Image (cartoon, rainbow, N blue to C red):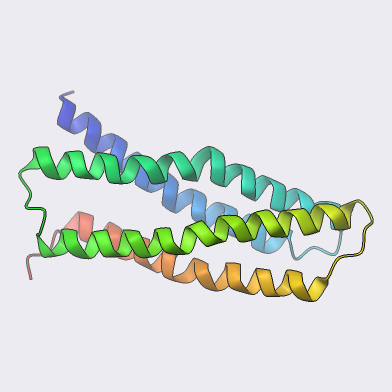
Length: 156
């Protein structure tokens, strides 16, 4: 396998990890944290935070590096419209994801306190959960459009 194909495969795999892990942990956090059992809620939050750091973070770093290498060595123009839209959507997803990580950590801490039998401010938790939920939609939608752009490379 030539180097270009290897980097392209790495780019596709890391995109799949960002997207798939995002959907997976969002689902896990959404349903797990809605449990009435404090230990289950804390477990879901703990695993969500861990998965973001183990899987999503490395893939989020690999994406722009491998993407830039592919543009450079693939003969694409940096200012091709589909690429410029991709850059913007990736930035949007990142701007949503970074606060989500901090929100997840705060939610995890609250839920771990609850699992230890401590009283927590459920209204504060619900506000964090709503922010987390709302920020996930533009990131998810942006990634869907990025996949479409990568496959079709429209010339508009």
